[in-house]
Image 1 (cartoon, rainbow, N blue to C red):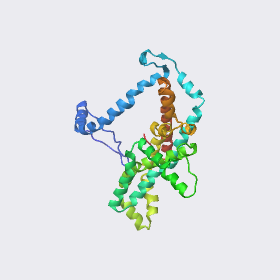
Image 2 (image 1 turned 60 degrees about the vertical axis):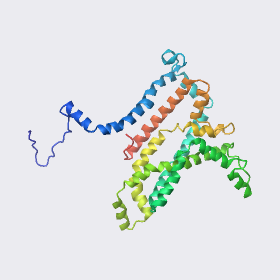
Image 3 (image 1 turned 90 degrees about the horizontal axis):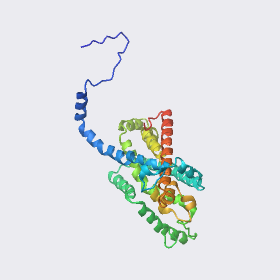
Image 4 (image 1 turned 90 degrees about the vertical axis):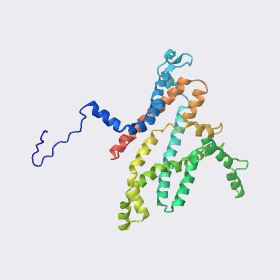
Length: 322
């Protein structure tokens, strides 16, 4: 056995352990085989539904014809991207998308954090679990049901909200056709459906905080608000920043179904976003290459945003996503 000599005051260098042979690596893999089996479904999901479809991005540079296939379609280069950037309505559609995304960050993103902090302060187990169940339930409703409920409540003909306005002497409001009410209705529906479900990760992070920190704070005279501000929020700050980075990555991807259900000819000027534009101008008219180019553009912007915000978070002392 080789001896290690060290001078006084000098710490010997620790070298990383290396596998002597491939057989030792195989033994290690076999010993943790159950962990790799658990990992396999997730890996297959991303490979099949995320990475393999990326091959289809080639058609954004082609005049794709389904009967000719990818290999037989004519190559047109950046033509579809030029069409996108020179489209008369492009700036308006991009502006609508960014405004709705900004409202998501400003109004929706803090709500799950606040709800998680409030749920953590509840001491009655029965009441806490009941409240959690109630705020989780809307997440399992489709957007069709959520928008239908809103339609029943806000319609001019017998809607409960307009009936209350009329009862108290106010004029009825056409929420569904008014361009000014589209964005408030959009963000309210998102908060009602998703805020409760968004608390799950934050509650799990709060549960991992050492209870001794709260005991020490109480001994020092800190009240509930002080404990939240100086212990709970700093402890979950990394989770908040990670989820914020992932949220910013979907800056141009707001989802098609929700907006499309609220979209009509009266509010189209403020409601048309990139996702609905892809459907109406791309898929309905059979412009597959054009719609793919728009999706490619969205992905590039999302990648740039994730990398930029992740780099900024590391400069601020956080771990980031990668």
